[in-house]
Image 1 (cartoon, rainbow, N blue to C red):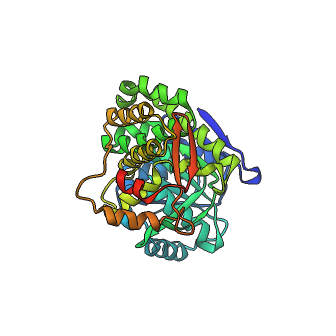
Image 2 (image 1 turned 90 degrees about the vertical axis):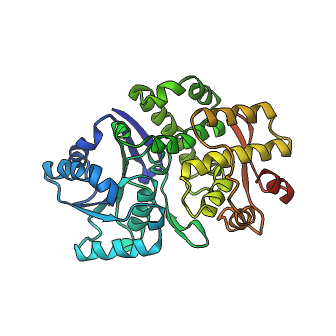
Image 3 (image 1 turned 135 degrees about the vertical axis):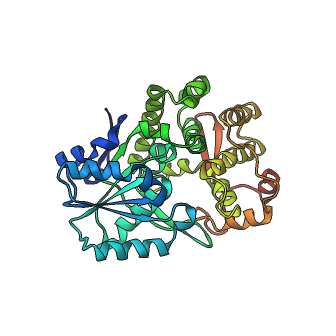
Length: 356
């Protein structure tokens, strides 16, 4: 088993990575409990796929547990779902000594983390990510939240989990689109932090797409180590942690303009290429480096351009509503080279219009 620590003082926690870990979580919680009973929160699809396995693991270890579900999809990531789940917890008699387990992808992790931060003014929770995107990115770092009509993730809180349990074997049971969705975030780490890792992704593409578990576990662990280092240095995104937003500024706007029908990973892939083009126009990135990034994204089967049918004016509106926009200025994370980025709000509107 691989173990990575996110060092945040009294809020520190471990990320555990192992094939078949889903069936061992009960044993882990029996040895290191953080609550007297647990509610597993999952969408209806994930509950059907993995819910009974996790419930059995807990109950076989003598741990009381309940399953509560919500409708799958980004459309459920709203305050109404938080209210519904809170009412369910109250009816079940959950109190501050109880905890939550977020079983699912990024949407479930965001919803459950925010629910945990708010219910009874906070109860503990752990992440059990079931998608590559959640395993390498959203389950680590304590960002939680929901969408409102004006934009994505505009209501939320920084609230750290007590643990992250990653079963890499789960990835074999998911559609290929889910793997690709997470690979956009994987590529992001190479661009923002680790040129050698980017090269590894270039060299290991066939093994990764073939779901070689040894290679995938190394990829997951490397991403988690990078995320942990960034979060340890800047937990609440006041400085360094902002580099994790590479591809997300434009990506979130494109995702919103699609009515959230475009997968998050696809939106981030499009955003990374667009923001790399901005860096070239700004004169801080060489064209060959942008082409190298674009080629890798394309080779992994991810999109590199905004679909023509998307309303560009609408995308601009969502950019201005982004939570990273201050005083009408949009902050962008732009690559200066593979492995190094800068953060700037000094981008001319004409440049943004050109890349869109």
